[in-house]
Length: 499
Image (cartoon, rainbow, N blue to C red; front, side):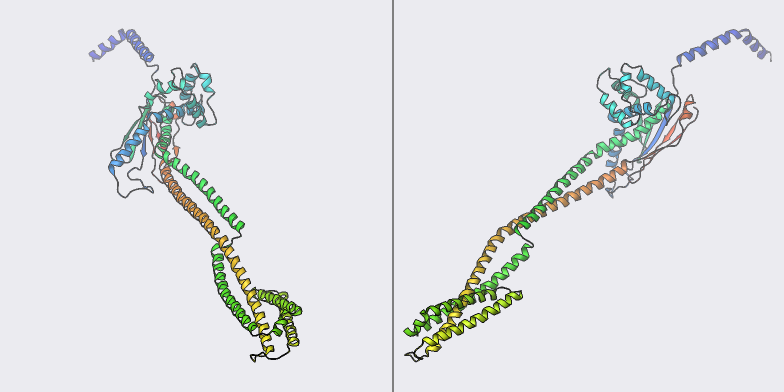
C-alpha cells in the first residue's frame, strides 16, 4: 500500500514534466505522419475457364502443359505495361469525369477527385489537358489522352504513367499481384493503395482492360480474317451477279431459251429432213428417167405437141402449181385460209391436166406408133411423169433449202453452245467459290462468338464506398468471378471493417 502511494506522489510531483513530454511526442508523431494515408486492400478472384470451361472448340482431352501456358499468358497480359497504361489513362479519365469534389459518386471518393484534379490543375499544362476531358464519354476522353501522350519529360500524361505518381504510375500499378490459385482455373488478384476510390476503380478497370487486351492480342487475327471474308463475299457476290446478268443478256441477244432442248430439236429435224431428201431425190431421179424413156417413143407429131406454145404455157402453169402444192404440203399448215388455198391449187391443177389432155388429143393424128404403142397413152404418161417430175423437183428443192437452213443453224449454235458453256462454267466456279468463302466466314463467326463469350462479362457493384472515407484505415475484400465461355459475369462484393 505504501509503495503505491509513493508512486502516485512521485508522478504528482512530476506531473507537468509528464504532460509536456507527452504533448511534445504527440505533436512530433502528428507532424511526421501528417501525409500518411490509410491502407486499402482489394482482392479479386478471376475464373478463366481455361481447363474446366467449355466452348465449341474444346478438345476431349486436356493438355495440362497448354493449360499452364494459357494461365501464364493471362497473368502476363494482366501485368503487361500496355494493359497497365490503358488502366492508368482510363482511371485518370474516370476520376475526372465521374468524380465529385463534395461527395462520393459511383465508387469515386471526393478525396480521389480533389487530389487528381488539383494535381492536374497545378501542372504547367493543366488548363490544356482539362480541355481534353469529355464529360459525356469516357472512351473519347481516353482517346484524347492517348493522342496527347508523347514520350517527352514535360508531357504531363507521359509523366503520369512513367514517373512516380502514387496512384497512376507504372511503378504503382505494377504492384497489382496476380497469381494462380493452386492448379485451378482461378486467378487471385490483389492490390493495395492509400485511397479507397482509387484502389476500387483500379481493379474494376483492370478487369475490363484485361479482357479487351486479351481479345485484341488473342483474337485480333480472327477479326481481320472475318473482315477479309466479308470483303470477299461482297466482291464474289458482285462478280456472280454480273456473270449471271451477262449470260442472260447473251441468251436474249442470241434468242436462246433452252440451248440443250433446242439443239436436240434441231438434230431431230435434221435427221427427218435427211430422210425426206433421200426420198425426194429418189422420186426426182425416177421421174426424170421415165420422162427420158417416154420421149424416146414419141414421133415427130407428138413432139410437135410438146412444142406448142399453149401447151408449154399450160405445162409451166402446172409445174408452178405443183411446186406450190409441194411447198405447202411440206410446211405445217394451221389456218383454214391456207387449207382452202391448197384445195384451190389442187383443183386448178386438175383443170390444167384436163386442158393438157385435150390439147394432146387434138394434135395427135394417128393413135399408134410404129412400135404399136398408143400415142394417147404415151402422151398421158409423159404428162403424168412431167407433173411428178416437177413435184419431185420442187420437194427436193424445198428439202435442200431446209437442209441449208439447218446447216446455218448448226453454224449458229456451235459457237453459241461453246460460249454458253464457258459462261456457265464461270458462274459455277464463282458460285462454288462464294459458297466456300461463305462457309469459312460462318466458321470464323462461330469461333469469334465462342471466344467473345469467354471475354464478355458484366460488373455489378454491391457496396457503397462512402464507408471508406469515414475510416482511418480499412481493408476491402473484393471478389470477382468471371464465368467461362457461355456466360461471364464479374461481381464485386465489397465489405469494409476498421483495421
